[in-house]
Length: 581
Image (cartoon, one colour):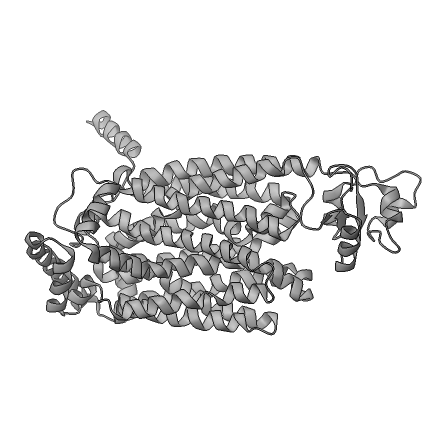
């Protein structure tokens, strides 16, 4: 494909991005305005983690039913699947700018519906609307930025979208923390997302369509006018010639296969370049989700509580740190993605992720083994009718239930009231209820229902932070960069939509199953399972994903035309050829 600048820089660096945008601030204006879609994407996926704690307090049925909690979280993801699928078609038919405007309207509707929801099912409806917007924004914002960026700084500029995604998640945790003591808590948390949607809608009304899309639609004069504001004067003509050549090839292809959605879909899978691009694009998107990142972002306060921190405020404050690290990691990605390359960052990131997940699995396993014991006497005398129903039969035998600890108590759907004097000393296993929680607190003790007090809790927080640090610069932002540049222009909206759908389907599977997995396998087994998935993802990234650092779109297309093989496999093939000769 022939877009993205006329020359590849000898040395692409983070400073080159700022040097170019300083000279041509219009480029950064385009990138940041479109990137607000990433901010909304991040905010709406992150805010639910804190809001869910207070939704559970307002609606007893949500607190009692794990599947309902998972549904509230995952319905945004289900909506995103539809949004990404439809968004690919809208991108190609009506343009990138129109897709962003529609996404803003959906974000706003969803925010208002959730803010005034009288029942859990209304929250779910609002989450679906937000999901439509998230799905469209997730593939349109990086696509718009990519097509309005010179090749030498394209990676860094598309990374601004990733930075705004993680910034949106960090902002959502700040908002969650700010409204903890405010009446209406979760309503404010969810409703405030309507504000940036309005801001972006107004900004996008004053910005142009993607110059690549305009040229593809024979609006050549408009395309040239935009390119003249992006490129130096001496590069514009060469860029126009490159666009002309690529569009002629695209139109010849269109004349053969047709322009309907079905024809384009068939043409995409019949085209070896697109097939190879999809193999790489879908691989990185699926791998991004199966490392378990969005369970951390959606459920981080819950994970912190699993680690032994019972307070909602404490859990959200600690989650704010992990979200902040995610944003910092995105800045690191901007600094290095055009210097060291997409492929290398992802592979290094995956090795770090696997290591952290294995350590987290070990930490949670040790926390479960060394959970505080149950004091049989205190459990039966703590308060009238307070003893955990599953524990009562054991107390009638001569032998005390010495094998019971806090974790066994919680798995029996009961609560644990920690010892008042020493947090890790034996405590009472009592019924799970708000009244019992209040009774426990009235005695100056802490009530646990999601995790147990543990000496290992701080290690879980440390390695959760390290997991985010190694995830964000590589697997956090790079998959979206790869998918914004690896498809031919004619199939870019469709290819990006298919890859985004694969991302959101994977997200739905992981987020919907996470709480059930933690109940079935425990936190330790769940993190170990994600480590296994990550190892598989690492292998396929190594096998299928080429390096696209600093390449013009036409060079990426030529790379895929001949097919990509890792250097190790190429060397083996050469040695076999030599032996045969």
